[in-house]
Amino acid sequence: MKGILEQSFYELLEVAPSATPEEIERGWERARVLYGPRSLAAYTLLTPDVAAVLARRIDEAHVVLLDAEARAAYDARHPTEESRNPRPTQAPEPVILVAAPPPPPVEPPKPFVPPEGAAWSGELIRKAREARGLTVVQLADRTKLSRAQIELVEGERFDLLPVAVYLRGIVMCIARELRLDGQKVARSYLEKAAGAPKSGR
Image (tube, rainbow, N blue to C red; front, side, top):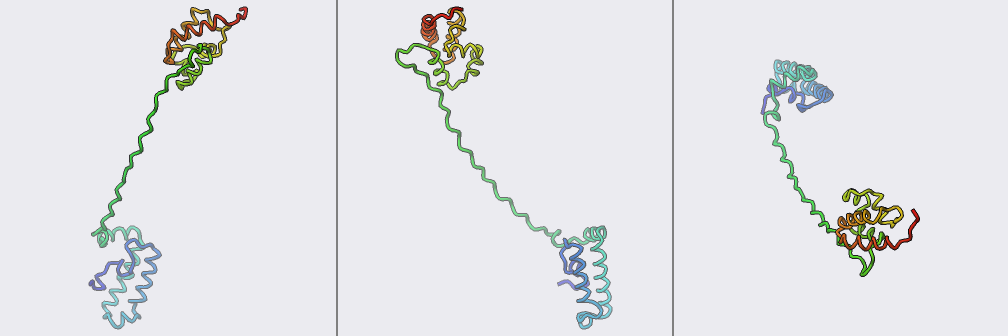
């Protein structure tokens, strides 16, 4: 066990090395009461010379530990037990990575099967497009046709559609993108167009 004159300033004031100025002030007052000239300990346990040296060390500890620069210099010269033997840091808990479940498989769109014997009308072409999960804009982007051309075909606006030779190419282009028999769809659609009443344009 250390003799009282061998104790560090922190031990003399009974404060931690991380003590605040308020804690140091209270520790100094406590030490003065405990080991001051008129204390029982100084009178019965210490010789006058030791008591005088101890009183000076307590006052020195008070002054040094309240001065930031002096305290830093003191700490550098007298490392505390904690700094000499740092506590082993607790190993961080292992992080367990949980793999995300795989996304559900994306089912390919089912081929559109028209009703038996049905003629290829604009409505049937629209249903085939929707069955493929395509919007008019997407179909236009894929076929390089205009959005208006596709909407006219689906809406059977024969009065605004081009003549048969050009209309055939448009319908075949749409049918191929929808995975349909282009020849069959174009022939059926053009028959419907030919039978439509003329608008007189």
